[in-house]
Length: 111
Image (cartoon, rainbow, N blue to C red):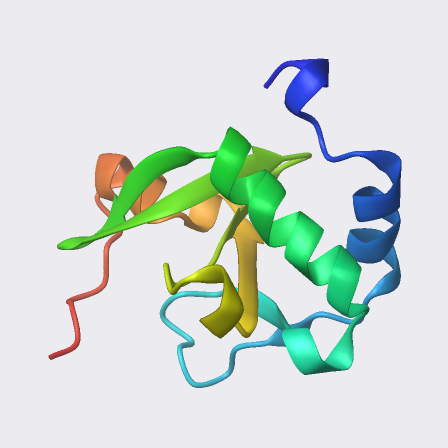
């Protein structure tokens, strides 16, 4: 990632200041999230927009999302329109689908 696409300082402060919640309903996919209604609205929107503008298309099994890597973490939303986006997720880069696929450590897809 180039410096021109790195999270701007105000977004980095949000990321670092927020208490991220561990997603305990998906222990086979360790990740955490923040909720739009519990953080600064303007910064949340800016963060989602930054990820979508500077991110890359990737997959999670058969689904496609926009992902963004920064300082060892991968960030994504579930792809809803911006006005409907309420959750922002992150996981350590080694826990992404693509990394686990290459490593042969994918859990079975839930149906």
